[in-house]
Length: 274
Image 1: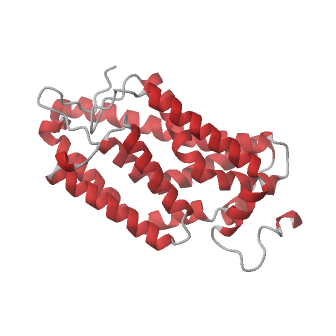
Image 2: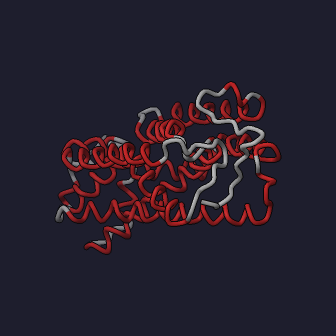
């Protein structure tokens, strides 16, 4: 694959191939960024006034999955666009292949949304209102954020983040041609991304999954980890942010700007009721 030589020139490592690909595939990156912007606009409209704080009810399955997929596009497209550009440069195929790669990526995140919804249904049926804020909800939200902070420092997180930041080897090692191959490779890249970001997404549920402000914070943390040259600084910085949020939720939730604290007469659980 001689056409890969400019991407893998000696001395290039980590994020450099992604930056090079993004420059040569500027139009594709711009399209993904515009789609992300549209996703933010649509999500803000749909979720306006729906934030009920930690463990906000998710609504019906079809509604939630539809909103979830758009949310993932809005949150992930800016940080994954260099990887899509790298795939486009490597494939040297039609413009359809990068779009199918992106569709495969979103398909994996849709599966993660299905899993989150199913977990929420099971938890609600097993615990009833035990997960309400006035019962175990506050402790669970704080603990979720602390677990997410700890996960940032685990070997599994390190491996998954490495695949997201330096996907060239993974793409070459699992190369599949054609449209079906593009979807498959995109789905695999999405799986590494889920492995990297699942704890951050759990944190979003713990803070308010229907809050655009918390969405923006989590998306910013993901982008910092995936695109900042100083990998360790980014990882430890994100861990400290999650640690601070977890402690604040546990001991002083009212001090967190943007956190909707459920009141005595407004205690949402992980219920799936519309």
